[in-house]
Image (cartoon, rainbow over all chains, first blue to last red; front, side, top):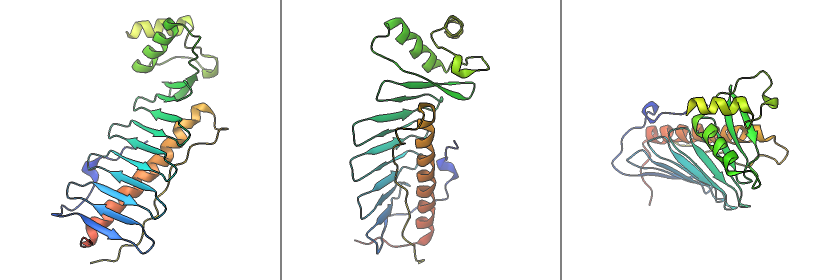
Length: 155
Length: 55
């Protein structure tokens, strides 16, 4: 995913906010610091900062955010959430999460019955973006010995 | 001053429950990327429009 860099923006500096109210009820405001806000008549809104970060909100109460580093998240109206990270990892409110393995997202449920050792291993894999080698990613078990050794080697 | 057409800003929707887990984050990120691009486009458009503030 290409992350837009604020340096790529061609925003003309202004001395005061520029606000536009549209006939359809939407409004937009551009702030002197490069910030931008959008509000629709239906209650959707979004914003962006000059550093490339931003977010959105919906009438149902869901909202999301992203930063300039490639991280982001969404909080949904039903209370669930999804987060993703610049290293290719992601996690969900049901306890699942993914790590990047040879450019594929590997998923593994993190159940409560798993041991703290398992949890620590997964946390290590996740935080270090461990590359797991294998032709069939569906057969790779992050708790298997080879993966453990790989994780250990990267510690 | 230029006339600035109303924006068509996308909304973000959660992936369907049938979406495979390994595609879930990707689906959301695609939506977010589209939203970011729309926002950046609007920022540039408004900055170039010279539209005065309306209070």
